[in-house]
Length: 75
Image 1 (cartoon, rainbow, N blue to C red):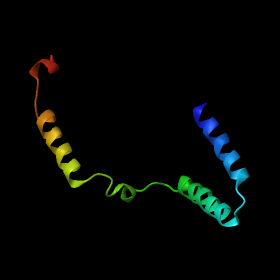
Image 2: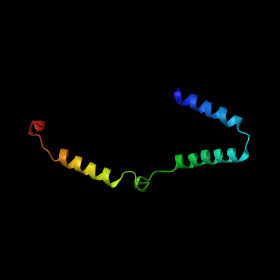
Image 3: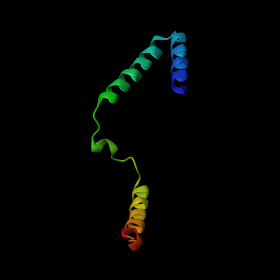
Image 4: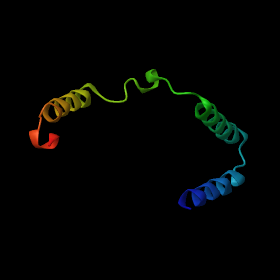
């Protein structure tokens, strides 16, 4: 319900706008959102999401934990 209240608050704010340039910008944002919502994601959309440091940290964590075999897990 929280998001519904936020939407109503935004609609009330838009209704108070008297400036055409501001309304044009709001329309651009909403139209851009619709276009991106319909777009199918590609693997390339995720390029650059994590930094090199974060990627190296993930590699280290995988190497440290995934390469350890607990023989009791197989019994």
